[in-house]
Amino acid sequence: MKIVVRIIFTVALIALGIWLWTIFFPNPETVVRQRILKLAKIASFTKDEGNFSRVAAGERVGGFFSTNVEINITIPGHEQDTLVGRAEITQAVLQVREAVREIVVKVPDVQVTLAPDKQSAVADVTVDVEISGERDALVQEMKFTFQKMDGDWLITKIETVRTLN
Amino acid sequence: MLRIVILVVVCFFVFKFMLIPIRVTGISMSPTYKDDSVNFVNRFAYWWHEPQRGDVVGIQFAGPHLMLLKRIVGLPGETISFENGRVMINSQPLAESYEKGSCNWNMPAEKIGADEYYVVGDNREMPQSLHMQGRVERWRILGKALL
Image (tube, rainbow over all chains, first blue to last red):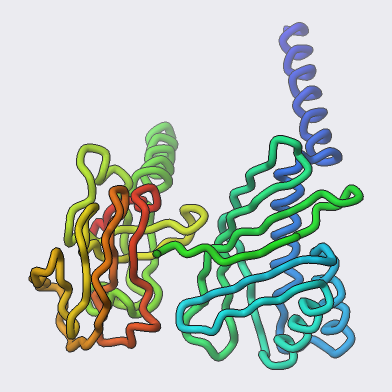
């Protein structure tokens, strides 16, 4: 009986060790996935948001991108939009937060593919955006390109993916 | 107790991997599927045969949690066009009993690839520019709408 308890205890200890290892040293795929989820959370806002929070959110969103980031968005029924550089993104975030009362951004699916050198990654993401006043949510598949820079995974490119051609 | 456990396990596998429950949002499949209705996508439907014309299918984006619900009107290798609202397959009009409203869509002839299907919603009364339609690769088709 004693040996069984010892085996169970040892297995539990190993499992705990592995779990803690993945928490403290997550693999790059997990890091990229967490970055996207965090970005979606910061991009969401409610009507109660104050001016200070709005400016802070703009700055925080900018921190997810490389300085030379490029965003190309083409959505059926809308004009094509291109943003280049962190400053333009921060500006766009502030403009959206001023123009719209409330936005909820969800990313129900994130598929991360790591490059063989483990210094870059591509994430295929389904983005679901609920805008206050709009009846239907905007659902769009997007491709995020990440680059590891000074230990940080930064977004270097975002482009829309045409699910239907 | 054991029966409940077995039931829970069976339900989990059925609704996770075989019949994916979905809630239809939007009007692009109206009147066949109304906004906010509930349905299932049968992932086993195309294990033994390929998708057929007229099938309503679930089309995945980056993953299985959100999908488009559309009807297949064009098959691999065919040429499709819209002429005054009528779907033309290889220059022949397609009989569509499910299409009820008036439609004035036009689209030049387009060749469907070897591993592609052409999908469109049933609501052709809405503006064409706001309606998601087009060629979809086979791997994106998750399954067939059950109801």
